[in-house]
Image (cartoon, rainbow, N blue to C red; front, side, top):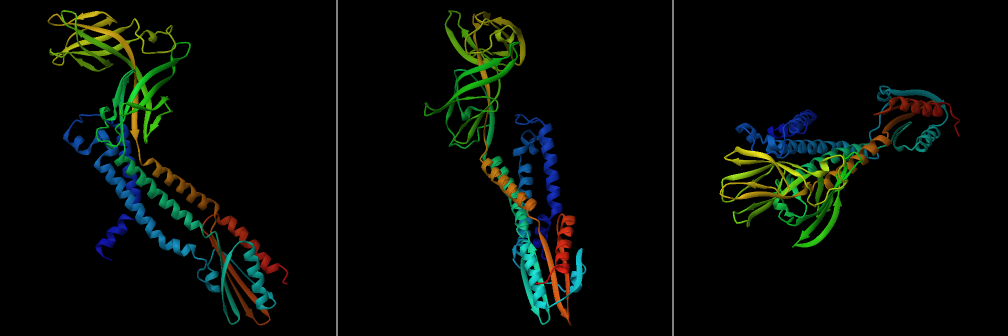
Length: 441
């Protein structure tokens, strides 16, 4: 055996497949325990192993690729078994070989050889067996099989695993996923969504957040939250939909999911003469840099009126008499913090003032595209088909030798089954009883 053939045999072996599956399970556990999609991985080894994005890391994709090769190799190696299993004919056995089978019977009947042979073939044909035979002087050897497409079900199941893994690879390499917090009334392009910088450039549409609603129980706790979104192509509406947690907007294969929600605040910076020099909308936890100074404003928490149990049962983009918890930051140091009401002026340096003008609800959206999903679904359907064939079809084989010995005929029959052998033994004994005790016509 050549070295290349030995490597191929090792790569396509079941041991290698089990090892790769175990490695992928361990890698998936790591991906679950280690926070994903976070920038700034700490440590050279962590950056090299891409532990912040395990499922797109070079070594994870490599493991999936090796598993694909292993499954392809296993499938190719089964082609020979498939060809033999699907054949309508097979080998014929001698009485000595039949006697070594798990199910075996031998008996003698009186009558002509051709009449006994006809009875045997008639009974086996009635039971759905496909027959082949060979006549040798005073001896007839008969082979019978049923459920031969069972082996095709096994092959289809192996192919389905290859298709599923290819779909996972295709989705991982050609897809993307990112999240964004978008205040009501704003619109964003996909290139502005963190994590979607390397997306397919054909997906160049924008999304506008038209409205956001929170439905609440009588005690004020949220019962559901929904966003109304509009897809914009060349600044023209292309599709509008209301999405919920499990009801995404789908456009050109891109799915937009409702992930979370919160409050944003509109900030304005006023000059000493009262003119507004800067404005913007900031979500909770974000920083608003004050241009022209070395100051920034950290919005820690937006306390909306609807946070109280007696609040209204829906949130809209209207301004409420609420408060904002904030901090003034310089060189990563807090130099001031407090709570400010909507419309309250906060003094800054050089006569400038800061004002939180209104609260705006934001919707947290998860945007993802997985082109491998149709491939995975195809693999899943193939797996159901293959496993169904394996479950329904029961491969069985029976061999019979009918031999004329003087005035009597000796019948030796045996059979085998790969599954449910107890039921096959009962089936075999019933057929043997019918042949040995039944009336000869």
